[in-house]
Amino acid sequence: MIRVLLLMLTMSAILQPAQPIGQPQNSELKERLTKLEKFLAYQFDDPPGLVRESPDTSINRDYWLLSDNLIAMHILQDPILGLNYSEMAAQINQTMHGYGIFTDGLHEALFGDVIQLPPYAPIVRVVENSSFLVRVEVRSNETGDFLADWVKYADVLIYGALSEYNAHDYELAIYYLNRALEMWNGAGLWDLPTQQDGFYTTHKLALLMYAAEKLNQTIPYQAQLEARIWQFQREDGGIRSHYLGNLTSNREANSETAGLILLAYQFEAQKESNLARLGADARVRLVQELTIGVLAALAFGAAILTAKRHYARRAKKHLLIRQGTL
Image (cartoon, rainbow, N blue to C red):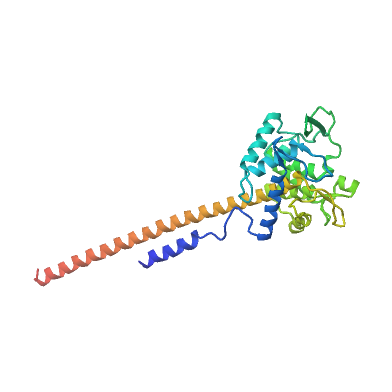
């Protein structure tokens, strides 16, 4: 009975999860992500059934199939905080199917595809020009030129790392990721575009987070990087897209930046959730093994006790026979 009680107490301790899984545990982070999700969802317009580039008047009311809507479709069909945007995600998917464009030679690397490296120089193609403008930036042999100095662009390097990861060349993937990691100078990623115009880019920080999680690599300055991202969140939930070295910004917030930040945290949450489920499965297996072990021990103990009683009865019987009383 004592062994059974101990087993029950052990099972209760093992099966009790340490904390809820699948969502960020930090309440401030959860609030920030909720605002950012709502910002991205607010950019959705029907027609055309797409998220617009930005709500800011400094930006034309254009719609970009890639990267904005490709990322938004993935985020909104499986939001990190459990809000229901499935119908919106389905409409974006349907619109993109209508145009038949899901790749641009770069951003599909986010979702498991392999891209051309070095990538081609980008060109902008207008796919609809009516009451609204729908664009896509593509990289293909149409231009005939490869992107010069592509390893000096932090974001392109990271897309290259993801592509090599998707191609199962993990050594090269980590090499490209490390080159991007080395661009950090305390303010942000000091790559070629930043050196040319002085503006750091917040979406590249999110992209670095996402790739590091996917490749199971550690960012030495992770806390600083995340603080930098959230430093530029506006009241409407959006994150300013660019900032200066003195850490000030009056730039727009846009769908691409919001989508990439949400993608990084979504992947991290799903990864932690999967690990927690694996841990729960291991706990269940341990309980099963403990149960089998204790039951086997109880059965063995019962068999020993039965044998002892049996031999005790036989010994008593033989004693009585010798004494002539039986």
